[in-house]
Length: 476
Ligand SMILES: Cc1ncc(COP(=O)(O)O)c(C=O)c1O
View (spheres, rainbow, N blue to C red):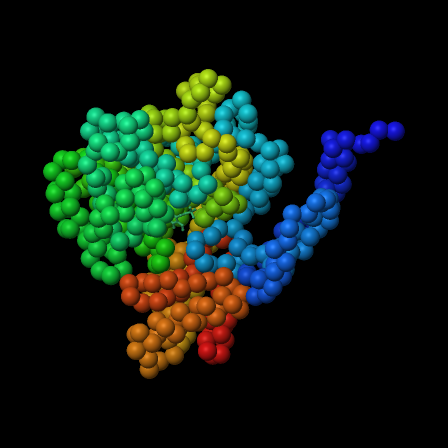
């Protein structure tokens, strides 16, 4: 008798694995509401992750069982209703199912011939997003890992434009023959944008922030003067549609219109803020966005598709194609009838994030997305009401979107002591683990800034959040 070969072994194991997952997945997904946000003893449970590579493995069944055991005890539950740190969304049922299937099918969306469904879903999904946000239907777009990479795509296109304005193809020759590239923005500019500008050779030092206060709100007059000082030289403008500490916006329309009077590329970072467009309650914040040159929006935030997923939209396809040119004898023509998204963005090999994008919009449509956004707007208002009602908490902003800024204030302390107390409280709440929520700064002041972008969050979770913060504060 011959020994079974690896292929035979894996086929049998794969069948068994499907049964194991069918048994396990309902428990994994079904416990999302109840699992702790950040298990306090995660470090101890994972302490034995220092082992040498096993010579002989223990097979899929035992490994997957161990993975589920470890994740149930030590995994962060960021998709749950009590994770408010950063800006993290949940996953809609259709998006979760589609994303699991993207892995099960192992769909690769570099080009159409690898995954006709994945690539067509990308085109359709991005077109639906343009409708949802009121962006011109003619704009090309590409799916990337998140808003950082979407900003990377948009700013790479902007940089390409800036070079071409001066007769230089920067993707070909680099930047060395050119002067510094000025970037005009407000103090709301996100760290992700700065990271992109730093890695694209533009440099953080060339970012000019026009601020009228220590929170970073735009100083419109100073911005106007900055534009005039360009004296027709080309420049990049970054408009921040939704900043992370209080959910405020740059004046989108005004900033774009002023930039249009000069020779500027205008990029809008609407990672989560662009979703304001989906509700009549908030749409005014992003009016005029369609006049920009490029726009970033995230999927794993307020669209509620699983990590990782983000979208870059750029007015001019040619700039994307030149910035990310990718050709070789064995590769398909980027401009054929069968699209090659891998030739207009940074990743060549890409998983089918489009499955989840397409599925959530197909399943819930415009109305479902509006309900999701408005649910989070309501939760933010509810949170603000609970903060106002407490004599130990100060509300630091009147929330206009999905972020509530507040601090603990037992009374009788200086501003500096309060900052110190809130930093310690933030660390203690993180150690407690029932909620994933951290502190940040609003100007000089230390604040909590829960961001609500998950359909799962309920008013009862907010009641518990306030109770936990006060309970932990009382122990300090
Ligand atoms: C305005 C803005 N831009 C960019 C980013 C970076 O997004 P990602 O983590 O999806 O890359 C974020 C994340 O919170 C953001 O809020």
